[in-house]
Amino acid sequence: MIVRPKLPTGKAGGYLALTITSIVWGTTWVASKIGVAEIPALQMAYIRQFFGGMCFVVFFMMFRKLPFPTLQQFRWLLLMALLMFVFANGLSTWSLKFIPTGLSALIGALYPISVVVIEMVFFRNRNMTLLTFAGLLLGITGIGIVFYENAFQDHPAGFFFGVTLSVIAMLSWSVGSVVIVRRQVNINPYYATGWQMLISSAVLLIVAETTQPTIALRHISTTVWCVIAYLVIMGSVLSFVAFIYSMKKLPAAVSSLYAYINPLVAMVTAAIVLHEKLNINILWGAIVTLVGVFLVNYSIRRSKEKIIA
Image (cartoon, rainbow, N blue to C red; front, top):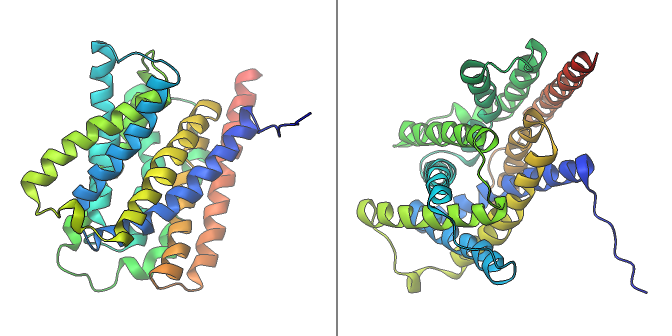
C-alpha cells in the first residue's frame, strides 16, 4: 500500500503557502532584473503573463472542464487583470530598468500599510489597532534600514521615473488585494488568475508594441528564456497558487506579511547573483522587521480575543 504524505491544511497550510510566496517572489525580483537588462520590460512581462495564464486556463478547461467566464465574471477579471498584472506586475517589472532591485522590492513592501489605510478610510475596519500600525511601521522601518545605503546613493538617469512606476505598482496591488476580498465573484480563484494573466498579456502586448522597441522572439537569448521559464513556473504559477491559498486561510494582515520577507530574500539573492551591496544593516533590519511581524500577529490575536470576550 502506498502511503501519501499529508500536506498541511488550514492555518498550517496557509503559513506554508505564505512561506513559499515570500521566498519565491523574493527571488523573482532578481530574475526580473536579469531579464530586463536584455529585453524591454513590458515585453518580458507580457510573455511571462501569457505562458503563466495558459498554464492555468488550459489545465482548468481541459482537466476540470470549467466553462468560459460569463460576461459578469469577465468584467471582474478585466478589472483585476488591470490592477494586479498590468499596473502592479507590469510597472514593477519596468521599474527595474531604472532603480536597484532592493529599492524596487522595498517600495513593494509598503503594500501592507497601504492595505490597512484603504481598509480604515474606505471600509472603516476597526479590527486594525494602533498596535497593528506600530507593527507594520516597524516592519517597513526594518526593511528601510536594510536598504538605506542603496536607496540614497547617486542615481542614474530615470531614477525618479522608476520610483514612480514602483509606487503606482504598489498602490495598484493594494487596491486589487482589497477588491479580491470584498468583491468576489463565483469563479475558481486559480482559474480566475489564469484569465487575468491572459487578459493582462494582451493589454501589455499592445502597450509594449506601441511604446517600446521590442525584440523578435528568435533573438531573445537562452538566459532570458530561462529567466522567463522561472518567472512563469515559480513566479506566476506556484507562487500565485500559494498566495491565493494563504489569503483564503489567513487573516489579511497576516497573509500580507510576505511583503516584509520577500525584500530580504531579494536582497540576499541580489547580493549573491548580482553582487549588490550587502552589509551589517541586514542584521538590524531583520531584527526590526521580525519585531514588526510579531506585533502585527499579536495585535490580531488580541483583537480576536476581545471580540470573543
